[in-house]
Amino acid sequence: MATSESARLSKAVKQHYMELPQGEKVQAMYIWIDGTGEGVRCKTRTLDSEPKTIEDLPEWNFDGSSTYQSEGSNSDMYLIPAAMFRDPFRKDPNKLVLCEVLKYNRKPAETNLRYICKKIMEMVENQVPWFGMEQEYTILGTDGHPFGWPSNGFPGPQGPYYCGVGADKAYGRDIVEAHYKACLYAGVQICGTNAEVMPAQWEFQVGPCEGINMADHLWAARFILHRVCEDFGVVASLDPKPIPGNWNGAGCHTNFSTKEMREEGGLKAIEDSIEKLGKRHSYHIRAYDPKGGLDNARRLTGHHETSNIHEFSAGVANRGASIRIPRAVGQEKKGYFEDRRPSANCDPYAVTEALIRTCLLHEQGDEPTIYSK
Image 1 (spheres, rainbow, N blue to C red):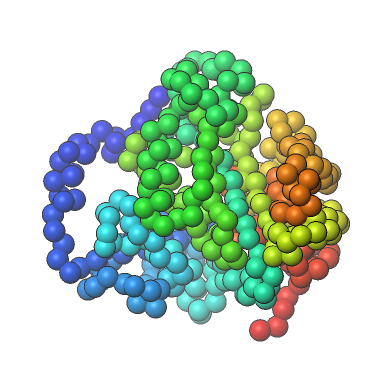
Image 2 (cartoon, one colour; image 1 turned 120 degrees about the vertical axis):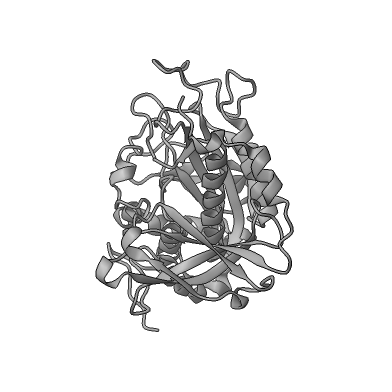
């Protein structure tokens, strides 16, 4: 399996420099979503002192013509700090800064889905929407071959790998452990991890998070994952069906609840929301992957623990349904539901916004409602 040349550089030599004192100065790594809607970019600036809040961080800019976000003749884009985390790579007092992107005219870039999502979340904050997202991913070599798979064949069939233990069942656990600790250090609301059904496929969960924090924390966790994999010389793929054939795809199951759903008798509110979702299936499918449903079409086949992309379904403890109500929720008559349709490479701003629009703002039809300021 191919690993990157950078991973072969001496980490012991690098550590000598990383341990040097930096005085009062602070390194702030600004992170943003590029024009693909999937990739993350970053660059670092020096601050004179440690920022305590987002307001302490200056705006910045970058060349959007090199990130698929503008033309070369008018390429300046603005980075607007939106969420701040501790930096697990450079350590305290250094920071990771998740940013929104604005165009030259100060309007949100096409892939800045946070801008509208935040406004939608503010409209329903009195209902206290909670989310938890289950991010699946696949570890690949730099040649695109799954980590640990035979170079000229396939591993044994699926069965022993889900939550597996042992060198012949768990492929790449060092990466998973490093990512988990890095997220905890950063302040990301990571709440768990496990090996998935396909060998070299893993999952981590983020949540519960309220409102806009859900997508902020998942994007931060994704950035940290890509950086950890970079250090190990491998690639984390969020492709929803990285290996064709009889292998599980990768999703980003999204758990959702409101204050009403979590209180006694909340099952009624859950069922009402599911009914609304059933009438707006095509709108959600378009919102649940960055290519308007084309990526998910490879994954949502009705096989390998998925529903069919063309049909809406719901059920208690049914992992072949669009929407799953956990068995404990059905018994206790309150809690949350799980939307199993979002793809692994979804934009969590788009997913959480769509759920709010349909379930809490009672929108209908194939297009989102435009609200006045």
